Length: 346
Image 1 (cartoon, helix red, strand yellow):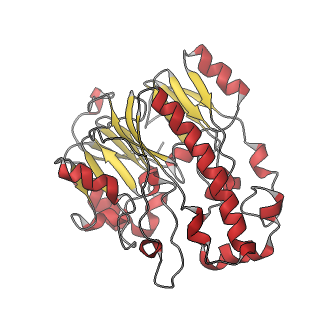
Image 2 (cartoon, one colour):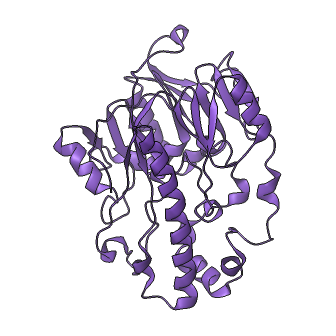
Image 3 (spheres, helix red, strand yellow):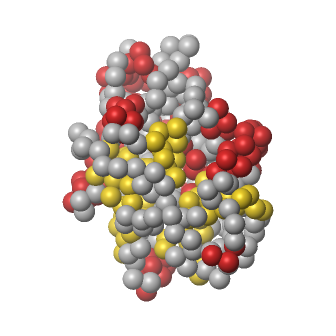
């Protein structure tokens, strides 16, 4: 059960976390109308997913962090025009973004905001919640490809190719209050690199050049995640043999739920971290050399497995949304000057 809401305030991804959203999947009953050969894999994925999410929630709450989870209405709320279930709110980072005291909601193709039980409370308390109804160009924003760094915002253009015009309109609007930096990451930024604390970044083989975007910061390059590539050809998820080899289930996903999954072989789960503060990070997979490096920097890595990560294609950053952090819109790069839009490709 979700706790009482706090406030909306988040300017960085590494300042002390006070309130966070943690995604979820549908109740098992939502699959009761399907044949057992299809429903049973969904039920198993649901059981494992909820168990692993609940473990993280318990840990976060033990650190006095408020954890919000989605609440589910009637199944009819989650059906598309073809009466197929839409993707559950497992990865809030896909559609939501917090900049300072404003929560932005970018999804516009669902019947109802899937987190409305929570956002309605924020609105009732007078907090700013902006949707495409308030600012139509928000539908062009890809939140996982927007990195917040106090007065600076970084936006990856390649993730916004399909609606770059709308993203430009948003960038110009945000540029009134921020320095908006157009910076190539070639995909969802949180699957490419992670600013862990001021002056320190963990990155992947996707991006190794930060001379313009984060000049003089220490960069740790994670090793190539070979484990992700030991996959069965043609399989876009690998959860358990009983699920992976279920042809009926696979065909159902392709026909009715293709957008539920991604391509886990492209995802570096090790870098997709939830940073609790400058001394603690939550990781999904063990990485001994990286953990040894973090320890030398005074940082503890807390590992929580997510057995269905290849199905949902999400790390702990994707599966969460930091709503409230103990911070303010500080300027880490005061020499950059005025607000506006800048190209810092490297």
